[in-house]
Length: 330
Image 1 (cartoon, rainbow, N blue to C red):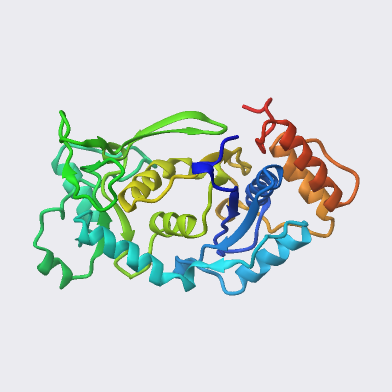
Image 2 (image 1 turned 180 degrees about the horizontal axis):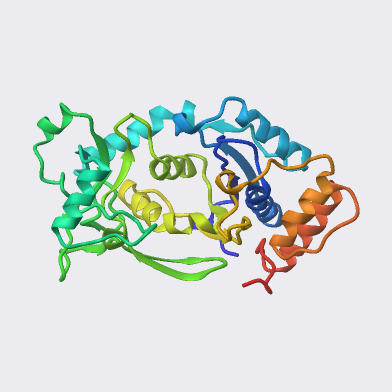
C-alpha cells in the first residue's frame, strides 16, 4: 500500500484509561499492531487521558501491563495526552487567529431549544447538530462567561494554504476555495465514505467549558505530532473521521490512512463496553485471549506461543495486501 506522502509507516493504539482493556479494545490493539508489523512500520501506544473526569487512577499502567502480557510491545515509550496540553493550546490558538474557532456558552438544553425553534427534532441516539448560535455573538461578552471553543464548519478553505483566511461557504464557492465540509475519504476496509460535517454535526467542540481538550482536537494534534500515517481503530469511531479530516485541513496537517475494524458486541447487541458488561481481559492464558481477538478479525487460532502466533498472523496480514482484517469478513 502506498504510504502517506511517502512517509514511513507509523501506526498507533490509543486507549482511554477509563478502565482495563476488554475483549473489544484488544481487537483494535491487535489489528493496529499487526498492521504496523506487516508494513514493517513503527507501532506506538498513546494513553488518551485528556478527559480527566473519566480517567480511572492506575488504569493506564494496567493497560500497558495487559498489552505486554499479550506480547504487544510498542516501539517507543508511551505518551500521555494529559502531559501534552501545550500542543493542544497552540493548535487552538492557531484556529482562533484564523477566525476558525469561537467561544460558545450554549448548554445542551440551549441547543435543543434552538433546534426546536428551527423546527428540527433529533432522532433517538442521533447527533445533536449545533445550529451555530454563538458564531456571531459578542466575543468579549462570551469570554466573561463559562464557555467552550467550537470549530466552524460553515467555511471554505483555500487549497494547500494553511495560513490563508477562511471564507463563508456558498453554493457557488469562493475564488480559489476547493475544500468544503463535505468530506470524502476511502476507508481501507469500509470503502468510500462521505459526510457533510456541517449538516451532520455542525460546529463541534474542541475545548469544553471545564477546560478539557476534546478527543477530536487532541487526536488530530497528536497523530500529526507523532507522524502517524495509518490509523487502525474500532468501527464505532468511524463517524469521527470526517470531523478529524476537516480539523486536519484547518490546521494544515496531513491526513492518515484510516481502517475501522469489526466490533465485539455485548449481550444487548451493542458495542461491547463497560456499560453493557465488558469484563477485563483474562490473561491467565494470553494465547487464548489473543485467539479470540484474532477470530474477530478473521484469522485462525494458533496453538504455539503468543509470540509465534503474532508472527504467523503478521505474515497472513502481509499476504492479505497489508489489511489486518481477513478479506472474507464483511
